[in-house]
Image (cartoon, rainbow, N blue to C red):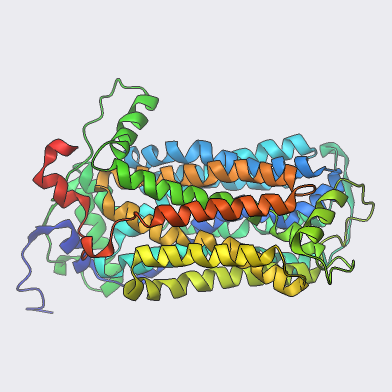
Length: 515
């Protein structure tokens, strides 16, 4: 192709170099692999909730014990995400994933064979702690390997994959729950039942993602930031040849310039905690302080509500299809009865989860993912701030109506839309990227996970303790919490002040003293 790149200088910026590598097979495969990895993380967190009614029956767990067991993955994610953010910045995005994700998958399989409630809780804690590396590294690996034109769309698609988590789990669970077997495994002191097979089966997406990860390349931007210019150029050249099917000597770029503020030098004798503090402190100092507090607070409001109740979606939904008469009862009357009865001993655990429950949860998850994709088309005309406020308003209205409606299917639908307040995540992550310099974006994103999952853990415990006796006041309290999130969202930066991906980097370059 002589003359195709005649006007392209051999020395160009990183963004130009990535754009010249093109979009093609490598980017599509990387997107699919990263989606599988982030999906594995969310399956680790929320997948257990589908099997929880059977596990609770099999192990004779009380409501509070179920709440603690459901929250263990959240604790693992909360405590580890912060560290994975720094690890990805030091070791590399791909290397972090190659170390952590296989360990997470092994622990997942081990959890399915846990003989006791305590062993199961501990293994789920550690498996989620390792799979949470996907949030820190996979998003960044994908974003830094994509041409700028397709970066935002690919990130939204990856975020949408997380919304389909329970949809995929239920597809796998449907044939498994129809099985009825009980095999004594004396040397492990356990009885092998269908729920154990289910936990093993839902580990497959993560296993496939880890295998696919072996064929990916390290983030060229990470290599460049570590002054490994030759390695970065080799990666971009390789991506170019895979995407375009052309010889590597036709890639026009020979020298890449990383024209941005980079991460300050880290002293080798500093402790790990000190390094994390140095990476975090700028987020909570002017000029970043105000926006950081606003974004993290609206994440807190959304995810205390969404995560707290999402853990209970299969259990609560199952209460509407367990054969008891639910017509004419409010949502809280049904949910309270279900939570109270979960403390009673159930002898037959094979059919405790009804197929209709899984179909309903599939609808919850499928609609959630589809709405998230739909919102990517609304964010342009409406703007991020107004779209965020719209999501809050819809959730508040649905929550209020939920307290009074007495039609079962309408109660389920309103309950689901009440939890769709989590759809603000796409906008929140976009704000974190646009408003923070590049070297802080990974840590800012990880800190959002700490906030979301940390308060999600608290919420799961509150709901587990209050659902049986104080359901109405609990739901009303969460409606009030979301309302404060709506008020705070009015103070989000106006979209017109952030044109064409102009980031804080530009401002920082003009006034370096602000950092």
